[in-house]
Length: 114
Image (cartoon, rainbow, N blue to C red; front, side, top):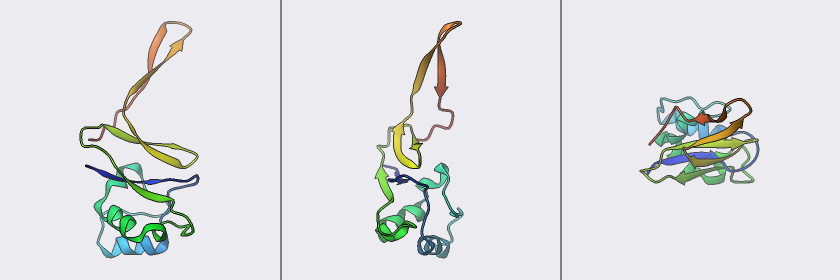
C-alpha cells in the first residue's frame, strides 16, 4: 500500500528546516526546498521523516499540515489540490459539454501511478 505525504491545510506543502535537514542526512536523492513535487511525495525518506516528526515536519509546527495517507495498491491515483489543501484522488476521466460537437473528454490523466 503506497504512502503519500500531502498538505492537509490551505497554503503550500512546505517542510520545516529540521525535516529537510533530517531528509538530507539520510542521503535522499530528492531535493525538498520550499515545496515538494507530487512525484516526490511517495519518497520513503520523506514518509519516514513526516511519520516520525509529526507536527515538527511542517514549517508551521503549531498545526499538523503535512500528513501521510495510505492508498490501496490497486488504485491509480493523483494528488488534487485547491489553494494548497490537498487530497489523494482516484484517477478518472470527466466530460463537459461542447456547444459545437456535444460531449468531449476534457481531461484524462496521463501520469498514472499505481
